[in-house]
Image (cartoon, rainbow, N blue to C red; front, side, top):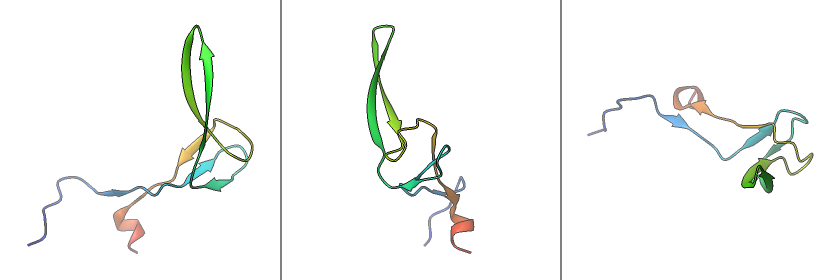
Length: 65
C-alpha cells in the first residue's frame, strides 16, 4: 500500500548554481568571516568565490515528466 502524501514532495539534488558566474557545482566551498567578533561560515562558489549561490530544486512531479 503506497504511503499517503500530505505535502508535495520536493526532490533536492545537491547541485548549486552561482548567481554571478552561472557555474553549476555539486560541492560548495566554505569560508569563514568575522563580523563584530562573531565568526560566520559562508558557502561560496568554488569558481568565482561569490556568496550569491542557490540550490537548484524541482518538484517531484516536474522531475518525473
